[in-house]
Length: 470
Image 1: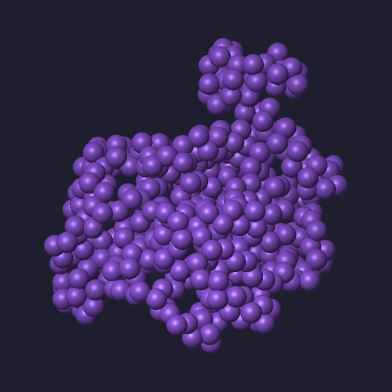
Image 2 (image 1 turned 180 degrees about the vertical axis):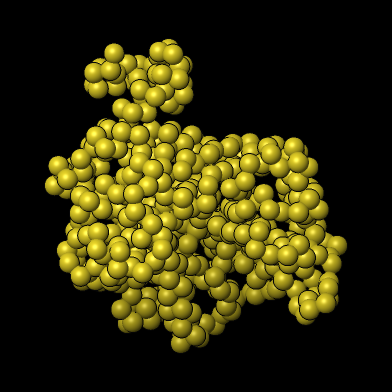
């Protein structure tokens, strides 16, 4: 049974309270009445209120406008309609400043009031639905896209979790396809800024003039073709996160303008003179080596130090092979649901090839291959023939004998009946390899090896005992 909406009526005139009670109860609403602010606040702390209607002038020391402010502090989404017999422009403006949804004069037109209440309740419900759907989207899409058992990746996530609620700028580097934008979205949508906008721009995809306009906006007539005012990405990202992808491809002149904006947290639109202040968190990404670009005079060192307060480097997929079974399971499930197919696995031969392949396109390449395979798969699992029938050179190339991962021939995917067991076995296999390699590079020094692996010495000793490594 759906609960009826509850209307709180606050007025010091008993006749008005009685009349409005009959009006709303006749329309199926639950009605609560109070003659002063004290009674209204008591009701508000003990019962759920969906909308409030209150008079400006009330008995006692607390006015209707003060009560309005208190109600909005307790519940910022509560719609409040202010009524008064002594209307003025000043009181109307003050009511709106304090959060009133509407302001009407006595005597009240019943039909008009009912229409206002219905409209405000619908808007409030839409806001609640929007928050719920946004939360569902975040949980189902953004927060679950980072799938890893790799120690280095887990260490990166731990670092990001420790700084994501700060305003510090973050630089994400790594090869194309390693998931830089996925991590940028993770930072935003799991941080204190998640309610604000996430705005992204590819700095390599636009000419210098267009990039300036996209970043900072422009005024009408600022240049040929500027037929109206345009709001830029910085302005759109206010109170949220601005993701600057491929920042290494930005020209030096725009780098200088960007540095100034980041230092001052304000800017002017192209062709404008008004200063616009913003509160944003910048996350930048590049697949270039910025230190090389700095040495070559193609990237400003002062901008680098401004955007790289926190810097993380995402490893390529060939260095986190143990994640392939988990990523494969995720992408197969995703595309199987999208295309309403029943695919529950991968043949051992395909998985062995995937574990040995170098993946130059990284996770994006793996995702593309699985997308094609799911579309063309006619059975319950992906076989070698499925990939060869894709008609895609990337898919075919991965099935050819390529440089195998060290020791890959000692790993037998066919022994494991499920992707979960396969993933756990692969994780253990490649973790042991990484530990042995780190120890060799550190000449057996366990403390140095632990630092290189991003784990504590105690954790390393536990893993050495688990794997029987001397």
